[in-house]
Amino acid sequence: MNWDDDSAPTTTGPSAAGDRLVGAAADREEQAVEAALRPKDLEEFVGQERVREQLDLVLKAARQRNATADHVLLSGAPGLGKTTLSMIIAAEMGAPIRITSGPAIQHAGDLAAILSSLTEGEVLFLDEIHRMSRPAEEMLYMAMEDFRVDVIVGKGPGATAIPLELPPFTLVGATTRAGLLPPPLRDRFGFTGHMEFYAPAELERVIHRSARLLDVEIDADGAAEIAGRSRGTPRIANRLLRRVRDYAQVKADGLVTREVAAQALAVYEVDTRGLDRLDRAVLTALLKLFGGGPVGLSTLAVAVGEERETVEEVAEPFLVREGLLARTPRGRIATPAAWNHLGMVPPQQAAGAPGQQGLFGG
Image (cartoon, rainbow, N blue to C red; front, side, top):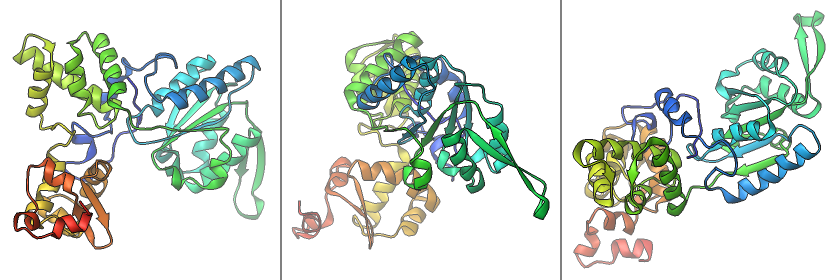
């Protein structure tokens, strides 16, 4: 079971990511549950084969040299395992880990206080590193490269820079938006790994492992049913597993089969492709009210009864990735797959005109 993002999610409305069963963000209560399921080493970590292999070489080489591991940058969507990998890096190097986040470091002094208290070889995990303040970011350049920071004492013409030597440490940065990192910061990481979404077969392995740890009886078909609705994200897979476990305990004999999993997820309004109420509301409004589009984002948000940011940042990314919705200069449009998924016929096809088919070439 792999996931990340220990910082509390920022919500944008009643259906924000932190409130959704299929949202990739985790609140503090869920983080406590997740902690018991995290893999402890690279061998136990499921998925991300290329990143695991590359990272294993980096860590083994550092141990053989009896040196501190290179700084590591992990990028990818929430819930794929960035925080878990940072903890594994510390465990593999036999070092303690310090966890903080970019939004928590608003001043250079905040970062200086953290860096000055690190011990030799310690791992500093900086989540959402792209959201760190610019002064702290510039201080981090020197700390990563020379293991030194300049602490400014005083103000104005009388200010003095006092160099402070730091013990060698490993910075593990995590970001969901690697493109926002300035090149000077990216270049100081010795290893960069991009986390991909998981294939259903990999999620099935995650679910079976978590089921053993949670003492949940589940068969192969039940795990496959949950995996197919998990949006390629281990955190979501484990969240759905816990909800299905509750249903199986109350409504069935405790065994999670395909039928039980499907019935449970129907109760929680998660369909066969992992769409929830908000996702289907966006698609339904786009199809029924606007004939498949194009329609502007603000108009679509009003039709759904949500904030513009909620539709754009919470619902749209998955719908676009699934090929159900497309963003165009004229507005949002539904793809043929969206009509098929909701069992609806495009108006142009129903009238015998080429309209929708001609738009997508289908």
